[in-house]
Image (cartoon, rainbow, N blue to C red; front, side, top):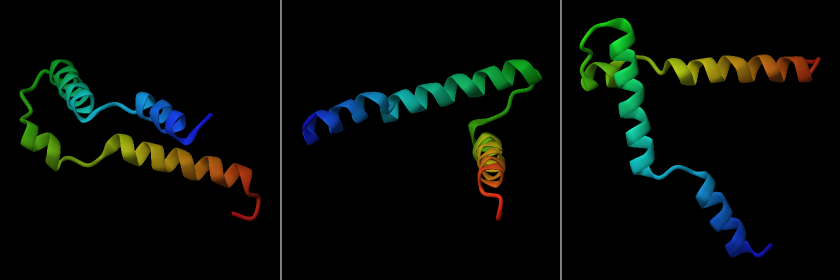
Length: 70
């Protein structure tokens, strides 16, 4: 596989900025429906990164199980 082909394959796997924005809008709409409150985009932007924190905790736990010295 050439470098160009590798870059193209990686680019296809990564969502575009428009796709990320669309996914974010859809996720926010689901949250609004589930909690039954109108939460503004500004309020979402000010909220903590719950998903990021969960990934961080999970990654730390995985590293701890793989490295007995940790």
